[in-house]
Amino acid sequence: MTTSILSSPKARLARRSLLATAGAALLGPLLTCPALAQGDWPAGKIITWVVPYPPGGSTDVLGRNVAQRVGAALGTNVIVDNKAGATGTIGAAFVAKAPPDGYTLLGTSIGPQAIAPHLMGRLPYDPIGGFEPVITIGTIPHILVVGANQPFRTVADLVAAAKAQPGKLAFASGGNGTILQMQGELLQQQSGARFIHVPYKGDTPALQDTLAEQVQFMFAPAAAALPHVQGGKLRALAVTSAQRLKSLPSVPTMGEVGMNDFVVEQWQAVFAPAKTPAAIVQRLNQEIGNALKDPGVVALADKLGVTLVGGTPRQLGDLQKADSAKWAKVIQDGNIKAE
Image (cartoon, rainbow, N blue to C red; front, side, top):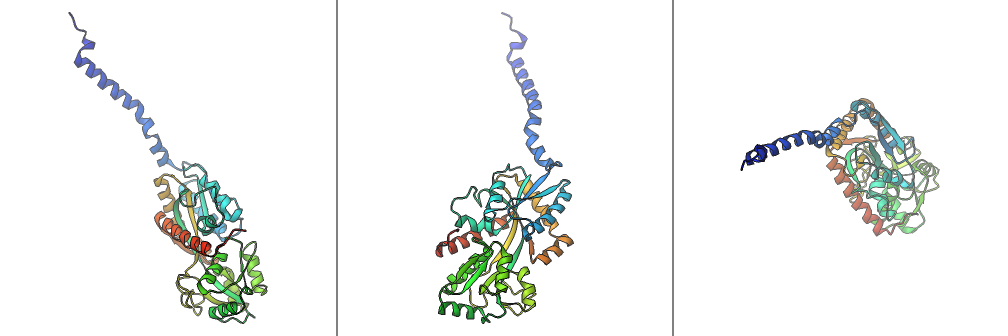
């Protein structure tokens, strides 16, 4: 019986080897496409930088300047899209649901990522698990201020007066769930005094009524309060930073006046949707970090009262988790509810 050459064991082995080589040649480009696509990012495609607040605030103004420089470095356009509402959670939810491809970013602050989730119950996004931390833009210290005609000269004076008249002294904030409210609540819990919280629609009207002495005090962003302190219209009792401010060297920190664990700084940061490729996150971190060193950005940050930070994605993630735990406890202990 004659055996076919094609059906011999040796021939069959050769044929399988040939098919495997041909298959690898065909599949190779397909298997490497994702890596190539990621490597080509952003390939001239527009990147959207979502700011969850109205235009004109420090998060928006600083974000626009950084975004412009990042776009130039990446060879594309980075456009800022303001999606304001619900204490910043509307914009955060939008980004959390966006494709994790590096084309949608969230330029936000501490509120939607570490405070609001503990006030508003169930949110349409996970503030930690729903995002990849990219970089911390900067921090904003606050100043505990009273009107120039108020009788309080120290934090101890303010606390003593509140204890003598429980629920009579009022403090202003930029709204329910803001970092300004949380500081007033923290002061109550640490001092044992009781105040009335008066929320406003933004920091500016809150500061205006503090100047007009419609309320007794507020924790105000340093840049907004400083001109009024230097002009004699507000009195600074303490600062919330870890160290005294260079612009107010005679004003003590909250820690120095006996309020332990009262370092409070409002951070601004950039996040991407969860599962955004690590290579893209690292490239964004690098380019945003470079933008933070630009003299124009540094000058703008000084004007806005923002201390630029930078750092790694992990450092931002650790900061967010620590602040989330801190404010969750304050909110729970104070039985604070979103109104």
